[in-house]
Image (tube, rainbow, N blue to C red):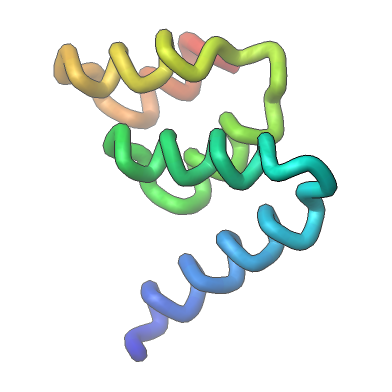
Length: 73
């Protein structure tokens, strides 16, 4: 397992641990599938005021992940 894979695993594990009702994990996984890296997906998943569909749509339209974070947060 590479260092990057290890870091991503730790972020995913932290999201799951903090998630009592499963919503945070679902949001995290949806954002990862939507094109966000592990760190960005965790930050956006934790920001429950962020519209998940808007976040994914930004990436689908080609918005850079860093810019998407600035727009959404």
